[in-house]
Amino acid sequence: MSTLNRLKIASLEEGMAIADTANCYLLVRRATLKSGKNSTRYLDLDLFDGANGINGKVWEVTPEIAKTIEAGAIVQVTKGRVARYQNALQLVIEAAAAVPSEMLDRLGDLVPQSSQSAEDLMRRWRALADTLDAPRHAVIAEFENSAQVWDLFRAIPAGKSMHHNYRRGLWEHSLNVAEISFDLARRYESRYPVNRMQVLLGAMLHDVGKVFEFQVNASTSVVERYTDSGKLLGHVYMGAAFVEKLLKRAVPDDATLRMEILHIMLSHHGEYEFGSPKQPQTMDALIVSMVDNLDANLDAVHIGLSGEMDENWTKTIFSLQRAFYRTTGSYEE
Image 1 (cartoon, rainbow, N blue to C red):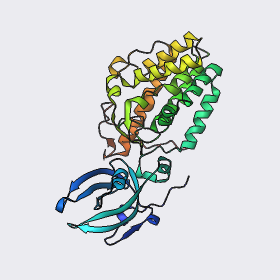
Image 2: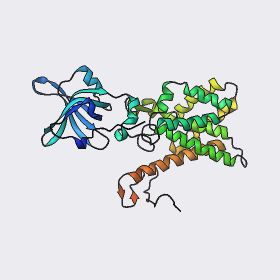
Image 3: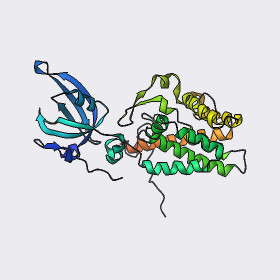
Image 4: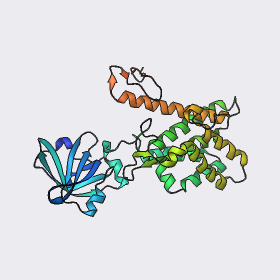
């Protein structure tokens, strides 16, 4: 899918007119309804293009435009002009259109998102699902039929700030954990009592509870806050409760399979101090837990390395309580 050549804020000039052909797409960071002279109402906006911000104004507020231009929304400015106020540029919006979620992949860095397309992630998911044996494949089929939960799972970040905190981050993280866990299980199963199919299913579903833990923006899938149930119950419990329903429908007569998968779900955070109701007590659960921790920590360090640095050192990575040194990168012969 090709990326649109968007009009960027850095290219705006005083007096410029904006039409729908300009491809002016912006994230509304803030939208405040204010009162002006003669009690007229207007919208005061903070607008962002992925790199730079600009103040915006809507002087004629209709119910339709107020519903379209709200905090957290992605909008296309279809009619507007660039003005100057107190020595700063200002974008006056006269008309705007809501941007459907399926357009977001074409908007580049406007909303942080996985470097892998939805099509690439789906190919990886299908390859894993098709590897499963019949009973466990039936569980995944039930999951894919769960409508909104399945849709959100493929769209939302894996975290608010800690790791994989971009669109499709939860899906990408789940696939990373599943692929690596499955590879480890295959390597160890000839030596230890490891069930690679159990590991694979548990890893694919381990973080599904985040769908219930996060309140996400409907337009951008960005995590806005934790839900009340997310704060009170947490994604580990809610994910296990959801997966238990899938298991009862897909494998009603296999109590052992259900018990062991639920143990993986309930123990994947590894330690009690990390919010895990149970510590891993099967080899399958231990593999998933340790790979989950590895993938999350590597991405947290990657975020640090991509941010503000102190020469070759990151700032302190909160989840690991230490700074990391930037090495020379990939080995080349």
